[in-house]
Length: 136
Image 1: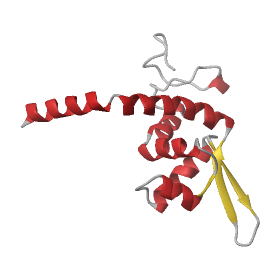
Image 2 (image 1 turned 120 degrees about the horizontal axis):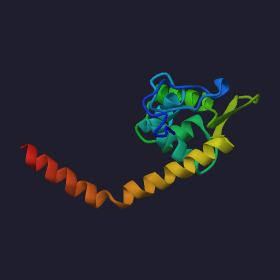
Image 3 (image 1 turned 90 degrees about the horizontal axis):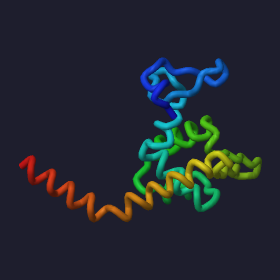
Image 4 (image 1 turned 45 degrees about the vertical axis):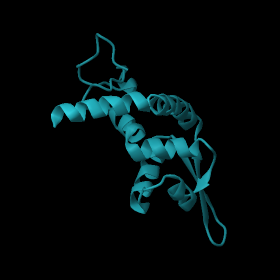
């Protein structure tokens, strides 16, 4: 995370001895944050908190996601090291998806945020209604 001294500076890389800075335009942590906080990424990670799932099981669990979007989301999360894809050479082939250790840590924090948002929805609904009435 950016500190007062690094906020707004060019993003570095740990390999270069410079800290990652999500506020830096070129920082790769920005892409990972996008993958995690994108609606389908968040829902996919939260669904996988309950265990491993096959693709179609996961698609049913994440209501409304298209096959293409789920596939892209899983690939991005796998690339980020958050999701593990286990392809078994059976007939028919079986592929299971689950969280990695890093994925579990990220998802635990994400679930806390989800719980907070869900618990405060009555306040959000009032704020939205007040906002909409003021616009109308």
